[in-house]
Image 1 (tube, one colour):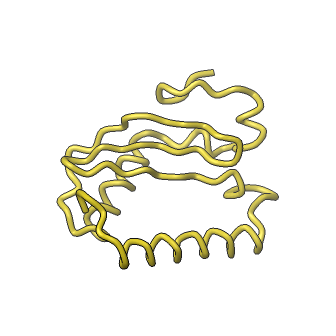
Image 2: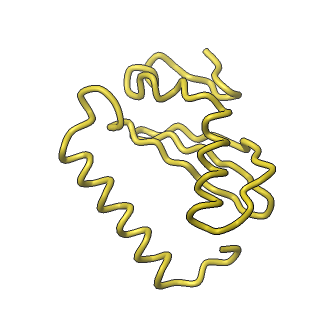
Image 3: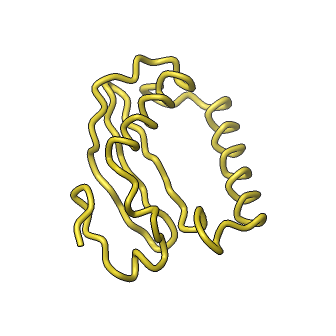
Length: 109
């Protein structure tokens, strides 16, 4: 099966469930919103560039003007995988990314 240029196997669907069916348009809107709210950039001209399906995450790469964003979707984001432990792990990862972002200079941001 192919979704938005991405080949989705039955194994991927078992692990990621409905997360493999997130429409490209929704990913572009999310990336544009993040670009505007978080980065203070225009967030226009969004274009889906690539997708990588790993063992535990789907990562979509979105190009907006001169900023490229990766949207990572964990397999634990749906069904029985959506546990308190998974939620705390995600919160910890977000806090780590914020710390790095506030402490380091990243080219292009």
